[in-house]
Structures are given as C-alpha cells and as structure tokens.
Length: 440
Image (cartoon, rainbow, N blue to C red; front, side, top):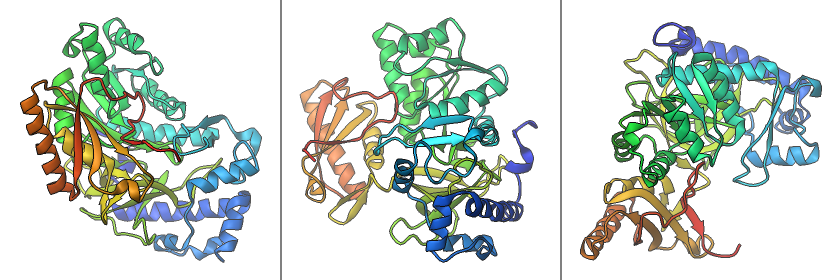
C-alpha cells in the first residue's frame, strides 16, 4: 500500500512488464492444468495442443475457450467441483455457488492461495475506487461467492458490517446507528434503497453515505443515472466489477471515472474477442468485444480462456491516475442481446436511453417479449417504463419522446407503456430487464 495505489508495482507496471509476467505465469498455469485437471488434459489433447505450444502470449489464441455450460457438465459428472478441479480435495478451503441465474448453479472452490489472490485483486480494486482506512461498509450483496472476498478486503482496509440481502431496516440502522459511510451494491439498488428510505420518512441525504461502489450489472456509469443517485444521496458513485467464476473483483474506476481499470495484473489475463468468430481483438481505445479471462495463479479450478459473455468497450489505455491497466465499460451480455430486424440491441442500452429522461423517468423499465425469438424480437418491442409524472398530456409527450429517442439512437421501433412508480418489480441483486411473457 503506497498512497494512491494498493500495489503500485502491479498497478503501474508497463505493458511490456505485464506481458512478460503473464507469459511466464501462463506457461506454468497451462502446464499445471495439463498435469492435474482431467477436464483440461482432455480438452487440450482434443485440440492437438500441448503446454509447450505456448511460445508467446499471442499463442494463447490457439487454445480452446472454456464455456459456462462445460463447467456445469463437468460438475454433473463429478460433483461437487467437477472434473476441472486441479487440486487435492483436502486442499479446498472454501466452496461458493453461483446464483444460478443462467441455469443450474455451479460451484467454485478456492484453496488458501486462491483466497489470497481474490483478496489481493479486491484490495487493489476498492483502493482504486477510493476506499480508505476508517471507512465502514455494510455487506448486502449476493451471492456470497463475491461477498466473502469483498469482506476480506473491507476488513483489511476499514470496517465491515455483514447485513445480508432483503434486510433494508438493518441496512438503514447500519448507517444511522453504526455510522456506516459506504455501500457496495448492484447498479440498480441505490434508487430502490432511496425509495425505501423515503417510504420510511427518511431523507437519503441525511444517511451519511459518502461513496457507493456499484457493480454486478451495467448502469453505474450512465451519466443520468449517476447524477440521479449522487444527487439523491449527496455522495459519489464509482463502478467496480468482477465475476464469480474467474475472480470476485478485477476492475474498478479511479477518481477520474473514465472506465474501470484492470487491476488484477499477475492474477488474471484478459482478452477481447469477436463473440461470433472467436477471433482476438486488439485492446485499444474504442475496441468492442466479449471479455475472455484466463487464470494465472490459481490452484483449485483455474480457467483457461473463460468466456464471460460480457460485452465491453475499451475506454482508455492510459490515465492521469498513473494506472496502466486498460479501462472498460460493460455494455451488456452477449447472450442477453436482442436482434431486432438485424440490429443488435442490449437491454442495458435501452435502459440508458430511458434513464436519460430523468426526472420524468426513474430508470425502471421492463422489456416484454410476447413470443420466443426471433418472433418475439419483431418490432415494435413492448417496453414498460415507470414515470414520475401524473399528467396525461405530459405522459403522451413523454411516451412519444422515448419512442423517438430509441428509434434514433438504437435504430428500432418500440411501443412504450408508461406505468406509475412502484409498478415494476425491484431486485436487490441484478435487475431483470427482460420478461418472457410466454411459455417456453
């Protein structure tokens, strides 16, 4: 820990130094997989690859991807951790499970070394986002797979208050009586929390909340949403991100807020690929693609070229803060994408447009699919939007304005239905932006 950085050597290392470090660690990690993971040994043999085929970092593109469904199938074959487990069973110190939002939950095992690696990445991320000694942070996020690694970091830097999900009154008490001053949550949670405070007659600005670390879904970087939250609580919001499979935390905004810096140097190797062809994309400002991550220093379940399905845009490759990790914004998930008359549309992008009409809208929306794709993607797309207005004339104007903006900015036709605040469901974890109104 030195001033502006938790780990200055890692966070400010030159690209050349990082590439050399990652190449050296990657060779060791692939050899480890070959020797100790039956799943990866078979995968590499099937691709006619051996560990020494990696002669440069660029050769990583020759190696096969790891898909989420493969991990599930591996664990069905050999529960609980699967055939991809690469350490002795008695070396496992923690087992987490994912939320299972995309299917059967998968289990994540960590050795003592793995736990330390996740903690190190989280410490770098939260320090980057402004967490400092003396901060008091309630833990409300789910699943516990990420919450525990965050708690390790919070307790190292400041003070952690475990609260749990769906415990709004306990969370309020943590601020009012235990003097909490920070909050880690999903991007959609702060406005839900603010509404709960107002219902209880509490002005959110009196809570003493100084900083919000938001992640788990796109949204915290949307200027209109960010302003709405910061004005509501009189605080500062910064975006952070990780993944229950490859690392609980690996990305964080600095004070300049130009994108989340990669801060897991030496622990994770990130790539950018074209989600359709699988071809590698050079990491440079403006580049877009799917994020792929490879473990570099993991013992229990190292992942080789894991497809996160997060679609990202590279926002920067340098920054005034001195960190050299490139910056990203998460646009949406490649597997959540809608294809409307040949136009790719991410639900999070739809929410961005709707949120820009604040304060007439509060950012709450739900895309309603009446049939399975591709029929369900046919325009006009049915979208419910919460509005704070009550005037019928103004609502007619607002409906037309949102439909026009969606057509101009995202190139598709929508049918907007305005509903009163509180109509759409609230989520303490990730907001569900698409509802399937049909039987599968």
